[in-house]
Length: 304
Picture 1 (tube, one colour):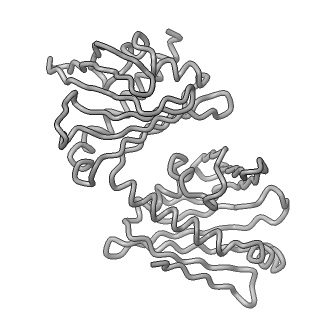
Picture 2 (picture 1 turned 45 degrees about the vertical axis):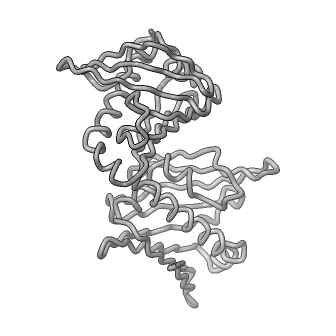
Picture 3 (picture 1 turned 60 degrees about the horizontal axis):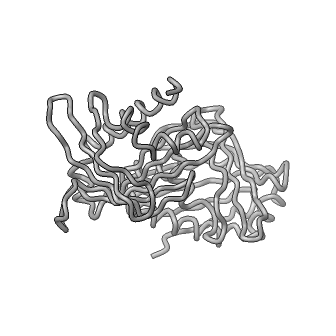
């Protein structure tokens, strides 16, 4: 059910938008502030996001660019003024195609009984700017974006997402991830080593390997590649080298390699078959992924 309400102040250039999400405010706040999440919901479905830059700090800038099927682009940008994690955001927002019409957004996240009410107050410089924004289809676009946030939040309950920007060209990060000699030099959390038995990074190909823990425990792993789009995207099934249908260690991972100003944003999204399956591993998987990305960063910095 669409719980969105839009209130237009008849006297002042202000619009107030409210929406109730069936999720804790932590998830809603993350959906609004983490690039890997924003990419999945911002704007109408027919537009694709080509730029998503967020410097989440007071004074930090943000910028999104949406591309239409005909190749036309629409840029939006602003600056964060106030950030209270999981509670409040204050930032400017403007459409780059209409300079001087930017406005200030105050977004509050209030949680009750596991649900979050997001209230966005938009304060414009002039009534004409506010009315023009509404006439341009703001309400329909906003409702569609909120629908996409709902879909994202449902997915996040079954996902673990890790992202980091590496100071290296995309092709080099791709090679580090898909070459059996390179990946063995950094894969796994701190203290782990990896022995690769086979690796064929193509659709239908298999990477079979064993991770050796610092306590001497061996962990068999198997990855079956489903999509390989060099040098931009990998999708693969990851399990414990078992053909058991209900293997609790089985999940689907999507890895994207995005160029950001000569650097590479790497995003790894692991999707589990259920919330329960995610909950069983999240305690160690999040930190393990963070350490693994740290080792990749060290490897790339060393220039190996």
